Image (cartoon, rainbow, N blue to C red; front, side, top):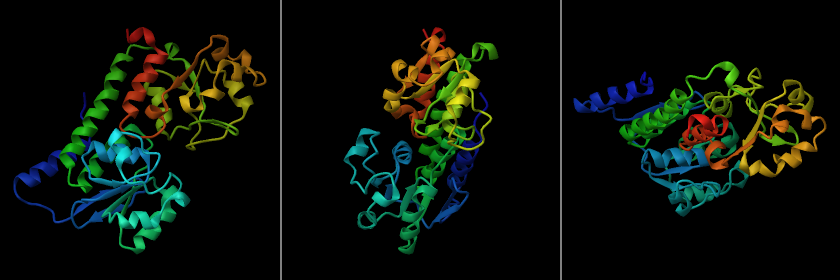
Length: 299
């Protein structure tokens, strides 16, 4: 397997340390394209989203605060809470009391919080990846920023290897053997995943064909008529949206009983913990989706 480019940076850094040439500061480019600089590795980190919490624990960072939505790994439950996921639910006072030298946000959605924190000299790194390689790069970057670059590189390699193993298992499939898939993110309004999202990549990597792969926005609203016209063979979604994706519920939507997915009862719900946030568990989500779409290849 061709090693991901992100590991080259890890090896170069290791070589630098081996010769005693240590850079006094650490830098990384975040999901917003901003170069984040710290005078030294962050020893206390606050996470503003479940995905970044997963990544930070995976790379060995010292997480001193996270949100009420951060449920994995189990250790995240014991961390002091700074609020919910939305910016207006977060307590600036609580974050400041934890004395972080790095805050990891979900990007633009948390800008109101990170702009205030910047006034107090607290640096923020935006983690909002749209693809598997970007998740791996996030592991390397956050490993570097927290003084755990070797562990970050190892975590990234393990993550990408899991996904590569799924690709190998499905490598013999022809295009006709890959069912067309509609992934429902939300029902009112009807929302799906566009091509620049990790959900789209889950579908395609797991051996499906996303019926809205031509849409270039991340979370587009689509019409029921558009779904009917594209006639998906499979309907997928996270199980926390499960009550909307039962056969009975979908059958009540005008025209939907005629869809191939409903005629063949191919409605697949995947654990939300594995597919709803771009963290370490996404690799397991890819495997779960592949097993659901092609169970014959995973006996």
